[in-house]
Image 1 (tube, helix red, strand yellow):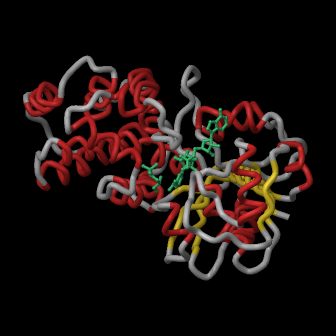
Image 2 (image 1 turned 90 degrees about the horizontal axis):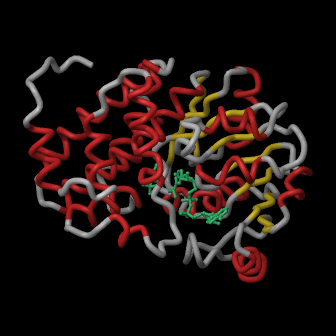
Length: 324
Ligand SMILES: NC(=O)c1ccc[n+]([C@@H]2O[C@H](COP(=O)([O-])OP(=O)(O)OC[C@H]3O[C@@H](n4cnc5c(N)ncnc54)[C@H](O)[C@@H]3O)[C@@H](O)[C@H]2O)c1
Ligand SMILES: O=P(O)(O)OC[C@H](O)CO
């Protein structure tokens, strides 16, 4: 049986994909009301409303119950991954689906998992995947990265479905960096939208943001073809183009003049870029990588600079070569 840790929009959508052919899925939810709603109404009204769920999905609030699963998809917000994963017994493979960098440690999710769940092999699932589209069965392709090619192939076979196509990679760090960095860049693109800076500016941010992602990724040992693939450029384009992205929507609010504190207060859904941005800025400085767009997002989120100041500063930087 496949277990899923986290019944937000993404964990619930993944449960629905996997259960579509009748495979049993055990879905752990943090909130008791979500557990009850899924089991009693076949819906997740909090995080994925209006999508009927398969009868073979059973929800639980007991993390230890995931120990009975032969594969666990790990889908909580990045900042909760360590504490939750440490409570799941056993050494069954874990597929890490959260996109972010841990605050305080600067660790990628695979590095956190190595500490929190030693002995359990890990893979990373990342790519352009709006949960509501996946839950609706629309065609989706993802990167599934695993250092052990044989295990990766086995895991791909376990989760592939007719409309859900994993592409294999052995570049775990590359897949993680693409997913974490694009969330921060999506905030920047949302700012462009909210402030009415135009489509040229949005395309420039995607292009130069990808240069930042590539510089940082290469410095951390990622491969350029991974960053140019589904989990990097693919997800960057998706998330920088639509208010379906929570990160883009957060940026749009900043661009409209709202404060980050007001935008982040009381929200139940996660915008991972907000917590990843400052730790990414620190991690980049540590490896000597310049990430001016990421730094601009940090300044906006912290309220140190306004939108116009950030734009002026980015445009006033010394002229330079386009190459990464
Ligand atoms: N939603 C998507 O389209 C999507 C797609 C791909 C990847 N992801 C990634 O998946 C991860 C989960 O995102 P999501 O969209 O499913 O979440 P969500 O925004 O839909 O829901 C928030 C989640 O946080 C959990 N949560 C809140 N407080 C908690 C606490 N104190 N302890 C533990 N859990 C708590 C909730 O139970 C819920 O599962 C993120 O890293 C996100 O970047 C999301
Ligand atoms: O809504 P966002 O910004 O968290 O993006 C969701 C997914 O990561 C898109 O691939």
